[in-house]
Each structure stands twice: as structure tokens, then as C-alpha cells.
Image (tube, rainbow, N blue to C red; front, side, top):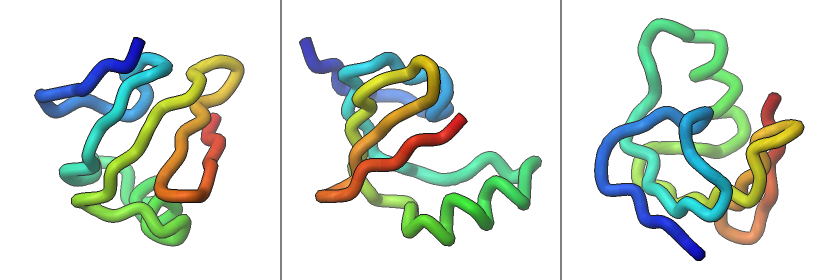
Length: 68
């Protein structure tokens, strides 16, 4: 089953199978924002959460990313 999120949420709160669009970054963690931007993530990008444990694995276009 694939879920489509229709309200703002954090990446950490998304369940495996969720498809979402990045609308922005939490302003309280500037280091995390720099890392995400360096990976090429940007508002407007569509992502698909593949797994949430042991790390958050998501796909963005043809690339896969793992964050813990």
C-alpha cells in the first residue's frame, strides 16, 4: 500500500511506503539543512520513503538515500 501525505510532516514521521513532496526544512537545525541541501534535496522535490528502520531510506528521482 502506498500512502500520499497531504499535510506537513517531518521526514522522521513518515511511514514506509509514503510518497511526499518537500515543502521546506525545519529552521531550528541549520546543520541538518546544509546536509540535506548538499545531498540535492530541495523544496518541491518528490520523495518515496522505502524503509524507516534501522535508518530512513528514501528515493528521490533515481537516487536512494539513507539517513539515521
